[in-house]
Amino acid sequence: MPELPEVEALAEYLRRRAVGRRVDRLEVAAISALKTYDPAPTAAAGREVTDARRHGKFLDVVLGEDLHVVVHLARAGWLHYREAFGSSAPLRPGKGPVALRVRLDDGSGFDLTEAGTQKSLAVYLVADPATVPGVARLGPDALAADPATFAERIRSRKGQVKGVLTDQTVLAGVGNAYSDEILHAAKLSPFALTSRLTDEQIGALHDATRDVLTDAVSRSVGQRAAELKGEKRSGLKVHARTGLPCPVCGDTVREVSFAETSLQYCPTCQTGGKPLADRRLSRLVR
Image (cartoon, rainbow, N blue to C red; front, side, top):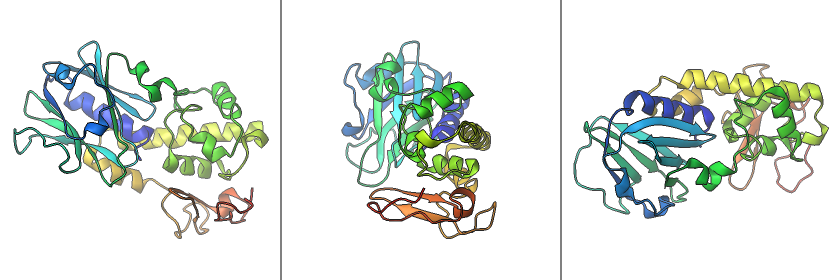
């Protein structure tokens, strides 16, 4: 799932490549992806791309002064920029992975695609991004929160720190992958309870959040959209590295699997050498 660094890089890429161009037309291939009906997609035609922004993990493409294409890429969505399209024919609904296409006046543009069968990509055409339910619920941006705000937000929700850190109403922008990286850098168990974290641990978590995300943004910004997934994988220390040695201590990276997701961690760095139970209903080692 694209998280804060990748969405920030996509916004920066669109600012470099698309801002100043006008929309020729906006085509919807997956009706289920478009979550709004007023204004209609035809309202985008002729509008100049004036900005591209990020709200947590939401991408916001600004058209003119008062129209926004707000996108949540979900788990398997992505943006593909095209210097030219092979055909000028309109998209055929229900054919292929393309959910929405934006054609620009210089012949270039971008596709929003979604792989797999679980279609969760969401597009909102709105006058104000704050009217998008997911944007309205966002907590402070994970990169913008100062130490006091960060501590207050983490302590505002009781639970395992992994779940709290990825709760977009607590802090916006962190997902499954970067939460694994942040907790590894902070030397915290993903199952540590926020109610038991010391001031020192909260401080280390804040520093790790800023360091991990800042490094990921710096590596991602400037890359082409097609290169971002590979860049993300190259910087990961524990996430998606089950069975490989931890680059910090050399211990084997372990995994805890759930119904639809998993987490990775280093026992030596994060849990005092103790493996976490890999059964959803088992007693969790903290």
